[in-house]
Each structure stands twice: as structure tokens, then as C-alpha cells.
Length: 58
Image 1 (spheres, rainbow, N blue to C red):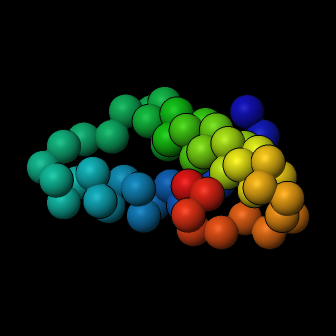
Image 2: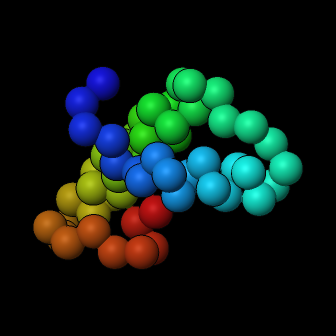
């Protein structure tokens, strides 16, 4: 995987607040999910004739 799209320490802090531990692959997996959502949002924006991704695209 390339650069992470999430801040690992922030993700780990939130998981810890929820009373859980963070596995070594959790942050990368979340980054992959975020990348997928970004791709889908960009596709939706383009399908609606826009180059700008808006909140509603997510």
C-alpha cells in the first residue's frame, strides 16, 4: 500500500477510547476503505457533470 489516507495515531486513539486494541493491519485496512470511498465519490461527481467532490457524493 502507498501513503496512508488516515492518521494512524488518531485511529488508534479512537479505537482505544472504544475499549479495544488495534491490530497491526487495522490502520492500513481503514485507509483502503477510505480510498475506496474517495474513488466512488469522485465517480459520482463525474457522473453528475462535476469535477468537484461534495459531501453528498459520499
